[in-house]
Image 1 (cartoon, rainbow, N blue to C red):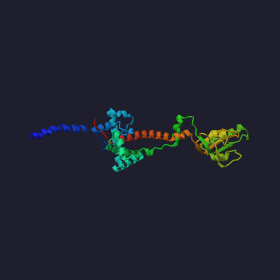
Image 2: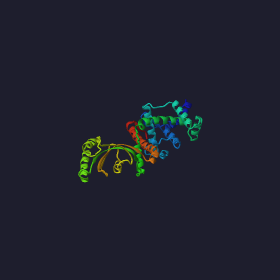
Image 3: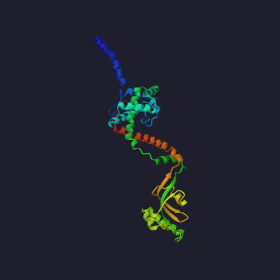
Image 4: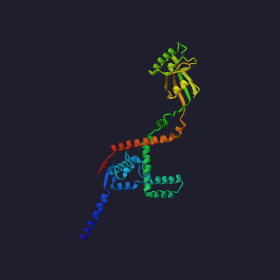
Length: 316
Protein backbone atom coordinates (compact mmCIF):
# COMPACT_ATOMS: atom_id res chain seq x y z
CA UNK A 1 0.00 0.00 0.00
CA UNK A 2 2.86 2.37 0.88
CA UNK A 3 4.55 1.70 -2.46
CA UNK A 4 1.35 2.59 -4.33
CA UNK A 5 0.98 5.84 -2.42
CA UNK A 6 4.57 6.76 -3.10
CA UNK A 7 4.01 6.07 -6.78
CA UNK A 8 0.96 8.31 -6.86
CA UNK A 9 2.85 11.07 -5.07
CA UNK A 10 5.61 10.89 -7.67
CA UNK A 11 3.06 11.21 -10.47
CA UNK A 12 1.28 14.20 -8.94
CA UNK A 13 3.81 16.82 -10.15
CA UNK A 14 3.58 15.39 -13.66
CA UNK A 15 -0.20 15.80 -13.72
CA UNK A 16 0.15 19.32 -12.33
CA UNK A 17 2.65 20.18 -15.05
CA UNK A 18 0.39 18.78 -17.78
CA UNK A 19 -2.51 20.82 -16.40
CA UNK A 20 -0.35 23.94 -16.44
CA UNK A 21 0.74 23.41 -20.04
CA UNK A 22 -2.84 22.92 -21.21
CA UNK A 23 -4.31 25.72 -19.13
CA UNK A 24 -7.43 27.22 -20.69
CA UNK A 25 -6.58 30.83 -21.46
CA UNK A 26 -9.79 31.83 -23.25
CA UNK A 27 -13.05 30.49 -24.65
CA UNK A 28 -14.46 31.82 -27.92
CA UNK A 29 -17.96 30.48 -28.52
CA UNK A 30 -17.27 26.72 -28.53
CA UNK A 31 -13.56 27.12 -29.33
CA UNK A 32 -10.88 26.93 -26.61
CA UNK A 33 -7.53 28.72 -26.54
CA UNK A 34 -4.95 26.75 -24.54
CA UNK A 35 -1.58 27.86 -23.25
CA UNK A 36 -0.02 25.54 -25.82
CA UNK A 37 -1.65 27.60 -28.59
CA UNK A 38 0.70 30.46 -27.69
CA UNK A 39 3.71 28.17 -28.18
CA UNK A 40 2.29 26.95 -31.49
CA UNK A 41 1.82 30.58 -32.58
CA UNK A 42 5.44 31.33 -31.73
CA UNK A 43 6.54 28.44 -33.94
CA UNK A 44 4.51 29.79 -36.85
CA UNK A 45 6.01 33.29 -36.66
CA UNK A 46 8.64 33.72 -39.35
CA UNK A 47 7.43 30.80 -41.44
CA UNK A 48 6.22 32.06 -44.85
CA UNK A 49 2.46 32.43 -45.06
CA UNK A 50 1.74 30.95 -41.63
CA UNK A 51 0.51 34.25 -40.14
CA UNK A 52 -2.60 35.93 -41.55
CA UNK A 53 -2.03 39.70 -41.59
CA UNK A 54 -5.78 40.35 -41.93
CA UNK A 55 -6.26 39.01 -38.37
CA UNK A 56 -3.74 41.39 -36.84
CA UNK A 57 -6.06 44.40 -36.77
CA UNK A 58 -3.93 47.48 -36.21
CA UNK A 59 -1.05 45.48 -34.75
CA UNK A 60 2.27 45.02 -36.55
CA UNK A 61 3.34 41.43 -37.32
CA UNK A 62 6.38 41.95 -35.06
CA UNK A 63 4.06 42.38 -32.06
CA UNK A 64 3.32 38.66 -32.08
CA UNK A 65 6.90 37.88 -31.08
CA UNK A 66 6.70 39.20 -27.51
CA UNK A 67 3.40 41.01 -26.90
CA UNK A 68 1.14 38.47 -25.17
CA UNK A 69 -1.89 40.74 -25.45
CA UNK A 70 -1.38 40.95 -29.23
CA UNK A 71 -0.90 37.18 -29.37
CA UNK A 72 -4.14 36.58 -27.48
CA UNK A 73 -6.05 38.99 -29.71
CA UNK A 74 -4.71 37.21 -32.79
CA UNK A 75 -5.67 33.78 -31.43
CA UNK A 76 -9.15 35.05 -30.55
CA UNK A 77 -9.57 36.32 -34.12
CA UNK A 78 -8.48 32.93 -35.44
CA UNK A 79 -11.08 31.22 -33.26
CA UNK A 80 -13.77 33.64 -34.39
CA UNK A 81 -12.98 32.68 -37.99
CA UNK A 82 -12.99 28.98 -37.10
CA UNK A 83 -16.32 29.37 -35.33
CA UNK A 84 -17.88 31.05 -38.38
CA UNK A 85 -16.51 28.40 -40.73
CA UNK A 86 -18.24 25.73 -38.64
CA UNK A 87 -21.45 27.73 -38.34
CA UNK A 88 -21.65 28.22 -42.11
CA UNK A 89 -20.60 24.62 -42.79
CA UNK A 90 -17.59 25.66 -44.88
CA UNK A 91 -15.18 22.98 -43.63
CA UNK A 92 -13.27 21.13 -46.39
CA UNK A 93 -12.17 17.50 -46.52
CA UNK A 94 -8.64 16.11 -46.63
CA UNK A 95 -9.34 15.07 -50.23
CA UNK A 96 -9.93 18.72 -51.07
CA UNK A 97 -6.58 19.60 -49.46
CA UNK A 98 -4.83 16.85 -51.45
CA UNK A 99 -6.42 18.13 -54.64
CA UNK A 100 -5.16 21.65 -53.89
CA UNK A 101 -1.63 20.33 -53.29
CA UNK A 102 -1.69 18.53 -56.64
CA UNK A 103 -2.91 21.69 -58.38
CA UNK A 104 -0.15 23.73 -56.71
CA UNK A 105 2.49 21.26 -57.87
CA UNK A 106 1.06 21.30 -61.40
CA UNK A 107 1.04 25.11 -61.56
CA UNK A 108 4.70 25.13 -60.53
CA UNK A 109 5.50 22.29 -62.95
CA UNK A 110 6.96 20.06 -60.24
CA UNK A 111 5.86 16.85 -58.54
CA UNK A 112 3.92 16.85 -55.29
CA UNK A 113 6.96 15.34 -53.55
CA UNK A 114 9.17 18.16 -54.83
CA UNK A 115 6.60 20.68 -53.62
CA UNK A 116 6.54 19.21 -50.11
CA UNK A 117 10.35 19.09 -50.07
CA UNK A 118 10.45 22.80 -50.96
CA UNK A 119 7.97 23.54 -48.17
CA UNK A 120 10.05 21.48 -45.72
CA UNK A 121 13.10 23.57 -46.59
CA UNK A 122 11.14 26.58 -45.28
CA UNK A 123 10.90 24.87 -41.89
CA UNK A 124 7.31 23.65 -42.33
CA UNK A 125 6.47 19.94 -42.12
CA UNK A 126 4.02 18.29 -44.53
CA UNK A 127 1.43 17.83 -41.77
CA UNK A 128 1.78 21.46 -40.68
CA UNK A 129 1.35 22.66 -44.23
CA UNK A 130 -1.68 20.46 -44.86
CA UNK A 131 -3.31 21.85 -41.73
CA UNK A 132 -2.41 25.39 -42.81
CA UNK A 133 -3.72 24.80 -46.34
CA UNK A 134 -7.00 23.39 -45.03
CA UNK A 135 -7.49 26.47 -42.87
CA UNK A 136 -6.54 28.74 -45.76
CA UNK A 137 -9.09 27.19 -48.14
CA UNK A 138 -11.82 27.38 -45.51
CA UNK A 139 -10.92 30.94 -44.58
CA UNK A 140 -10.89 32.02 -48.23
CA UNK A 141 -14.35 30.54 -48.69
CA UNK A 142 -15.55 32.43 -45.62
CA UNK A 143 -14.02 35.71 -46.79
CA UNK A 144 -15.52 35.28 -50.27
CA UNK A 145 -18.94 34.76 -48.71
CA UNK A 146 -18.81 37.40 -46.00
CA UNK A 147 -16.70 40.20 -47.46
CA UNK A 148 -15.17 39.91 -50.94
CA UNK A 149 -18.44 39.16 -52.75
CA UNK A 150 -19.82 42.43 -51.37
CA UNK A 151 -16.96 44.62 -52.59
CA UNK A 152 -17.39 46.42 -55.92
CA UNK A 153 -14.39 48.21 -57.42
CA UNK A 154 -15.19 50.00 -60.70
CA UNK A 155 -13.01 51.51 -63.41
CA UNK A 156 -14.19 54.93 -62.20
CA UNK A 157 -12.89 54.13 -58.71
CA UNK A 158 -9.52 53.29 -60.21
CA UNK A 159 -9.53 56.43 -62.39
CA UNK A 160 -10.32 58.67 -59.42
CA UNK A 161 -7.42 57.14 -57.50
CA UNK A 162 -5.14 57.54 -60.52
CA UNK A 163 -6.07 61.22 -60.91
CA UNK A 164 -4.97 61.91 -57.32
CA UNK A 165 -1.41 61.17 -58.39
CA UNK A 166 -1.81 62.37 -61.98
CA UNK A 167 -4.07 65.45 -61.81
CA UNK A 168 -3.17 66.57 -65.34
CA UNK A 169 -4.29 63.31 -66.92
CA UNK A 170 -7.49 63.68 -68.94
CA UNK A 171 -9.51 61.08 -70.85
CA UNK A 172 -10.33 61.98 -74.44
CA UNK A 173 -13.80 61.86 -75.95
CA UNK A 174 -13.77 59.97 -79.24
CA UNK A 175 -17.43 60.36 -80.06
CA UNK A 176 -20.35 62.17 -78.48
CA UNK A 177 -24.05 62.87 -78.98
CA UNK A 178 -25.60 66.17 -77.90
CA UNK A 179 -28.82 68.14 -77.88
CA UNK A 180 -29.07 71.88 -77.45
CA UNK A 181 -31.41 74.78 -76.90
CA UNK A 182 -30.20 77.55 -79.18
CA UNK A 183 -30.71 81.31 -78.85
CA UNK A 184 -30.07 83.34 -82.00
CA UNK A 185 -28.45 86.81 -81.66
CA UNK A 186 -30.00 87.77 -84.98
CA UNK A 187 -33.31 88.04 -83.12
CA UNK A 188 -32.97 91.28 -81.18
CA UNK A 189 -29.21 91.21 -80.69
CA UNK A 190 -26.74 89.33 -78.48
CA UNK A 191 -27.88 90.88 -75.20
CA UNK A 192 -31.51 89.91 -75.81
CA UNK A 193 -30.52 86.35 -76.89
CA UNK A 194 -28.44 85.91 -73.74
CA UNK A 195 -31.35 87.13 -71.60
CA UNK A 196 -33.67 84.58 -73.21
CA UNK A 197 -31.07 81.88 -72.55
CA UNK A 198 -30.91 82.87 -68.87
CA UNK A 199 -34.70 82.60 -68.58
CA UNK A 200 -34.73 79.08 -70.04
CA UNK A 201 -31.72 78.01 -67.96
CA UNK A 202 -33.63 79.05 -64.82
CA UNK A 203 -36.62 76.96 -65.94
CA UNK A 204 -34.29 74.01 -66.54
CA UNK A 205 -32.66 74.31 -63.10
CA UNK A 206 -36.03 74.52 -61.37
CA UNK A 207 -37.31 71.22 -62.76
CA UNK A 208 -38.05 71.82 -66.40
CA UNK A 209 -37.42 68.97 -68.84
CA UNK A 210 -34.63 69.71 -71.31
CA UNK A 211 -36.41 68.18 -74.31
CA UNK A 212 -39.66 69.99 -73.54
CA UNK A 213 -37.88 73.35 -73.14
CA UNK A 214 -35.99 72.72 -76.40
CA UNK A 215 -39.27 72.12 -78.20
CA UNK A 216 -40.70 75.34 -76.75
CA UNK A 217 -37.77 77.77 -76.89
CA UNK A 218 -34.97 76.63 -79.22
CA UNK A 219 -34.28 79.04 -82.09
CA UNK A 220 -32.22 76.58 -84.11
CA UNK A 221 -33.15 77.08 -87.79
CA UNK A 222 -32.48 73.40 -88.38
CA UNK A 223 -34.57 72.42 -85.37
CA UNK A 224 -35.16 68.77 -84.54
CA UNK A 225 -37.35 67.28 -81.81
CA UNK A 226 -35.91 67.65 -78.32
CA UNK A 227 -33.06 69.75 -79.66
CA UNK A 228 -31.06 66.71 -80.85
CA UNK A 229 -28.01 67.57 -82.93
CA UNK A 230 -26.81 64.02 -83.57
CA UNK A 231 -23.47 62.28 -83.04
CA UNK A 232 -20.02 63.73 -83.71
CA UNK A 233 -16.39 62.78 -83.43
CA UNK A 234 -13.94 64.94 -81.51
CA UNK A 235 -12.97 67.98 -83.56
CA UNK A 236 -16.09 67.89 -85.74
CA UNK A 237 -18.25 70.26 -83.68
CA UNK A 238 -18.03 73.80 -82.34
CA UNK A 239 -14.87 73.96 -80.20
CA UNK A 240 -16.60 76.05 -77.52
CA UNK A 241 -19.27 73.36 -77.11
CA UNK A 242 -16.76 70.50 -77.12
CA UNK A 243 -14.80 72.22 -74.37
CA UNK A 244 -17.98 72.80 -72.35
CA UNK A 245 -19.06 69.13 -72.46
CA UNK A 246 -15.57 67.70 -71.86
CA UNK A 247 -16.17 67.02 -68.14
CA UNK A 248 -19.90 66.34 -68.28
CA UNK A 249 -21.46 63.00 -67.43
CA UNK A 250 -24.08 61.61 -69.78
CA UNK A 251 -27.41 63.32 -69.04
CA UNK A 252 -25.85 66.51 -67.64
CA UNK A 253 -26.22 69.97 -69.18
CA UNK A 254 -23.89 72.95 -69.59
CA UNK A 255 -24.42 76.50 -68.42
CA UNK A 256 -24.90 79.02 -71.25
CA UNK A 257 -22.20 78.53 -73.90
CA UNK A 258 -21.35 81.26 -76.39
CA UNK A 259 -20.14 80.27 -79.86
CA UNK A 260 -19.73 82.14 -83.14
CA UNK A 261 -23.31 81.11 -83.95
CA UNK A 262 -24.95 82.36 -80.76
CA UNK A 263 -25.84 81.01 -77.32
CA UNK A 264 -26.43 77.36 -76.39
CA UNK A 265 -27.54 75.25 -73.46
CA UNK A 266 -26.15 71.82 -74.30
CA UNK A 267 -27.07 68.36 -72.98
CA UNK A 268 -24.65 65.46 -73.37
CA UNK A 269 -26.71 62.40 -74.31
CA UNK A 270 -23.94 59.88 -75.03
CA UNK A 271 -20.17 59.62 -75.29
CA UNK A 272 -17.39 57.17 -76.01
CA UNK A 273 -14.17 57.79 -74.09
CA UNK A 274 -10.61 56.68 -74.64
CA UNK A 275 -8.88 56.85 -71.25
CA UNK A 276 -5.29 57.89 -70.75
CA UNK A 277 -3.22 54.97 -72.14
CA UNK A 278 -0.92 55.25 -69.12
CA UNK A 279 -3.95 54.74 -66.89
CA UNK A 280 -5.01 51.69 -68.88
CA UNK A 281 -1.63 50.07 -68.20
CA UNK A 282 -1.92 50.49 -64.44
CA UNK A 283 -5.70 50.24 -64.02
CA UNK A 284 -5.87 46.62 -62.88
CA UNK A 285 -3.03 47.17 -60.42
CA UNK A 286 -4.83 50.18 -58.94
CA UNK A 287 -8.06 48.20 -58.66
CA UNK A 288 -6.19 45.42 -56.86
CA UNK A 289 -4.77 47.91 -54.36
CA UNK A 290 -8.18 49.48 -53.77
CA UNK A 291 -9.66 46.01 -53.28
CA UNK A 292 -6.94 45.10 -50.80
CA UNK A 293 -7.46 48.32 -48.86
CA UNK A 294 -11.25 47.89 -48.89
CA UNK A 295 -10.91 44.27 -47.79
CA UNK A 296 -8.71 45.20 -44.81
CA UNK A 297 -11.17 47.89 -43.76
CA UNK A 298 -14.18 45.59 -44.08
CA UNK A 299 -12.31 42.71 -42.41
CA UNK A 300 -11.64 44.91 -39.40
CA UNK A 301 -15.32 45.83 -39.17
CA UNK A 302 -16.33 42.18 -39.63
CA UNK A 303 -14.04 41.02 -36.82
CA UNK A 304 -15.38 43.74 -34.54
CA UNK A 305 -18.95 42.66 -35.25
CA UNK A 306 -18.04 39.04 -34.43
CA UNK A 307 -16.37 40.18 -31.20
CA UNK A 308 -19.57 42.01 -30.26
CA UNK A 309 -21.94 39.11 -30.97
CA UNK A 310 -19.79 36.19 -29.76
CA UNK A 311 -19.23 34.67 -26.33
CA UNK A 312 -15.64 35.42 -25.34
CA UNK A 313 -14.24 34.69 -21.88
CA UNK A 314 -10.62 35.40 -21.02
CA UNK A 315 -9.12 33.70 -17.95
CA UNK A 316 -6.18 36.01 -17.36
